[in-house]
Length: 297
Ligand code: PSU
Ligand code: MN
Image (cartoon, rainbow, N blue to C red; front, side, top):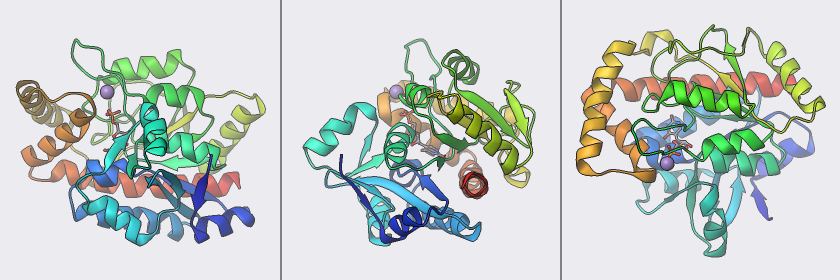
């Protein structure tokens, strides 16, 4: 498998400096332009300011890139034809030399093979609401990839109790970063349990090292609540989400278009407040991920 590293990332690897992987679907499909570009740059800067090296992962012309360049990030943020890829799409992306944005599943896959231990995102995919079973490939990827992923739980558009059960069944350790319950993306509370609270990066690192010593192949999910000044209360969230879900059902939106559709609808319904929360949590998670990568290095 050929991976292209940016100079910044290959230097960091050569000198064993801490690295944080960042995903690209949030750039291409999770946020609109120009906030997507600004956020991608701010997440990278948050990692650098904390003392680690960011590696934004994407696929360009069929090549796995670990550490995207500024022009590449701009392309992801502006081009209309970027394919959102999950695990099933990897052979197509490489075989057909496509340019693609990587989801949590594919970012974790590439980051782990590149030797990166910590990966930051906004919210993982999970079990969708509704009767037809739609389970994000993010979940089975976390069940088989020994990486640490920092996120604000799973995205609120999902069936959070079912997602939490799935993680438990498949051996994914869920830590609460300075919190006692699993965050719910735009909201700090979900009523769902974490497996253990951790109050520092050193504490998280000890658990991550133990996972590796035990040769467990599952991810560790460090769940970080959205900063409280931008949090959206749960009852208010449920109201906007119901409207968005209803719109999606009536418009027949399914598959990989569903998550981006719901996020955009909720932002429209809330006058951009959900988007502001999303941006704040992405940046905050990148900072926490950097602290953990430093504690592990
Ligand atoms: N985090 C965000 N916004 C996003 C995502 C994460 O703050 O858009 C992306 C991730 O790439 C995740 C994907 O893997 O949404 C889940 O998509 P799906 O439900 O189709 O598997
Ligand atoms: Mn799906």
